[in-house]
Length: 135
Length: 113
Image (tube, rainbow over all chains, first blue to last red):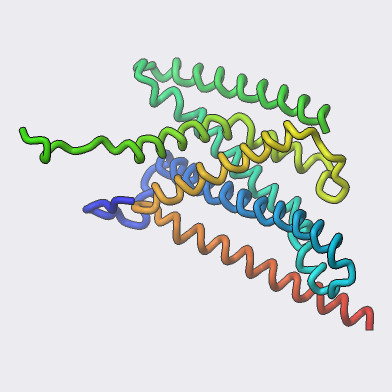
């Protein structure tokens, strides 16, 4: 990534509330990355455990213990991902009316955000019903 | 103007950004509710083998989330130092897990003896 000529100060984001929201939005990307890496670990642990329990059933219990570590942190790390995902999605919906080339007024921006938010909730609910029925 | 002075368009950069944008839209609608469904159903310890379509959708969502977040961390590194913070958080979580697991394992061993 190309570096900027003038690097801003470390605390620039504390100057305005909107900067703080921007910071929170960027920071939530870290939570999602942590969630993604956790799931890579989780999937590899499931595959490894299947292989080991099939071909090496008498393996040392310490190895079994190590392999099943990610299963214990399922709820905690998924919650981290959920928090990051919700913050990132809602702030994205908030940015959408501002970046459109329609030059909307303040009220129109609020209305667009509300419409986007409720359509997001509606689609999420539909997908949740689909997901739960398929499991 | 000679041909040598003409700059080539950054196709790779554009494609990367395009993928970043697509993964953002995909993840915004699917990721939060997918995680919510994963937490609210006990598939972690007793998986009832969901449909292969759902597995593929989940893997696509996982790829999108990882690509999007890693791209964002690298893109915001110049002003927010997100790469350093990301490494700090990952390191902290791994350290906490290690400490908890060592304590847990030693407690299990001491009680079984």
